Every structure is written in C-alpha cells, then in structure tokens.
Length: 385
Image 1 (cartoon, rainbow, N blue to C red):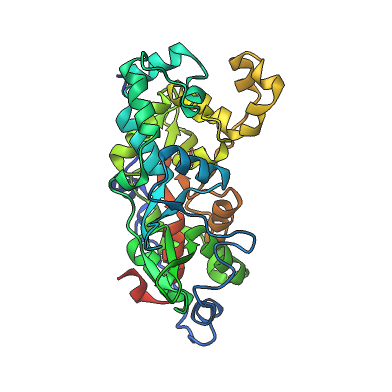
Image 2: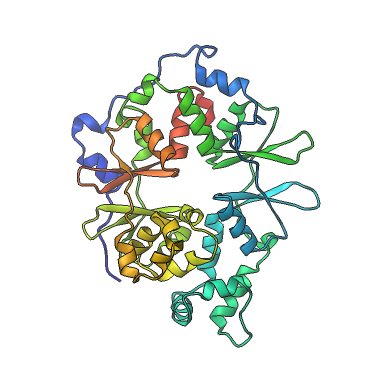
C-alpha cells in the first residue's frame, strides 16, 4: 500500500515554532466573582430537567433493547441523531448509549473488502434488498452474514458507551462538570423515579453557553493565548483522499475515533470524514453503497445528500454528478479566536475542527469537548478532576 505524507506531531510542531511561541503567555480570566459571572450563575440556577434540553423543539428519542440494527439506524437517521439511549423495556432504565460509531464499527467488523466488492458487483440496490428482507437462501456467505448483522438485537451489542446520569433537580453545572471529567458526549437526565427523561448534549450545552458569553473578552482572544491551544495541538488521525471509504471507517474503529482528516498527496487537508455523515443521508440504505467508493467521491456525495434523491442526479453518469457537488473544508489556525471556533463548530453542526498551518496541513484538532473544558476549567478548576 502506498505511503502518504504523515501529519506533523505535537513534538515536531513545538520544535518548529519560534522560541517566542513555544511557551505562549497563558491568559486566564481575572479572579471571578462567582455570583457575578453569568456563566456560573446560569449553570447553578438552571436545573438539568430544564425544557431547553435537548432543544426547545424536540423530545428525547430512545430505542429499546429489542430493537434491531436496522431499527436503530433508521431511528437515528430519521431523527438526525448521532446516538440514542438504549432503554430496558422491563425496568424503563437506560442501560447504554448506542452511537453511529458503534453501528459503523459493527458493520466494518462483519464485512471484508472482498465481501464488499462482491456485494457491490452484484447489484447497486443490494442494500435496499437487504432492508426489505429479500435475500434468498442461495445467496453467498458474504450476503448472509450482512443480513444477520442487520437483524442483530441491540441487547447483543458489546462495548456500548457507558451511561452517565444526573437527576433532573441537579443544577446544570453538575452535568457540565461530568461531561468535562468523563469526556462524555451526552449526559442522561433521570426523573425522580430514576427513569430516563431527557438528554443534555455537548453541542446543545455549548450553543447555550455561547449565547450567554457573547461579547466576553476571552472569546476574542486567539486560541494560542488560551489553555485551549494545548488541547488543540495533538496528533491527527488521517486518511488519503484516494483510499476506500471502507478503510476510513475501519481505521476509525481501530483508532477509536469518530472522524479522520482527509489529505491529498501533499499532506494538505481537503476534507474530513466521520460517522456523523450517516445522519445526512435519508434512510434507504444508500449510504452502504458508498463503502467501496474513494473517500474523495464519497465526500462530494454526502455534502448535498438531498441531490442524490432528485431524478436528474439518479440518471446522470456518476462522474458528472460528483463534479457538481462541492464539499467545503472547515479549518482554523492558532491565531483564530475561541469565539470563532465555537461559531464554526455550531454553525456546521460538527464535533471537531482541524487546526492547520500556513500550508493548510493539519497540526491539531479542536473538539466540542476541548472548548467546553476551556470554559469550565477557567471557572471551576475541579471540573477536570
């Protein structure tokens, strides 16, 4: 397999920076009057069962332990969700979190590149046939294995995310501190009986805190002058744009990450691929037809999935369709402000933004968790413990 340009590591970056920048001045807020700080006051006064979560327009969505993989995938994509709580039907208790990452990982485990190519060669609609349970007993082992996968029960899934919970009467700060300390993407809210009632996600919490912090001086400072820069500079997991989508998701599973930077021959970032792309595609199993595509073509297709379902696109040659579907690359630099990073993450509904150097080569990545940690740790140092 061809070796592609490697990504600059943390140590390399620190070595290459001018001496004046290797230890940038760390700027933290002045000692706060805890009662005067709007963020802390909000976090301490608002309860976890507030109607602002998960959002004012939506209700919490769950799946039961008897749901199949198809049921779970359809529920998440229909509701534009990256994860859902799995609820025990008998006790009404939340027992785990099922995410898109788990579903993709399981499919990767059960599918080989050879099996994928075999399926792809048989019919472009084979995945739709699977969904409609139209596989005959004469089909190959590869197809039979995938059919069993799609009917697997949620209770049989292994290594689901642990459940982190708070009671509804807890102050919101309890959920925020728990997110920072455990790196959980979401916290489940329980009612007085201990049953699942709601969910608080990182993205929704950061969206609300961002509106409260509008105009705060710390948001206008470049990230290299904040503690956030040390969180940002880290090794970046990547995939080459000509590699197969299947290999990208396989690497995500192996590295236990939910996204990869996509690089060209020069090591320049040209996009990103993540498990969150699944929620952009209507549930007709069309996503799985792309596992054999190149990452570059896949990114063009998922950038505007609604066009895939228009008749003009369906009957055009694939290359012509790909040529009219641009995919923006969302990046930032160490000179950008934390306010800009927050705005980018929330505007594009993404979980990470890649930090690039002057050559547009990735040198780090900033996640929702990194930004939330920065906000909390400067106010409540114990949040990171």
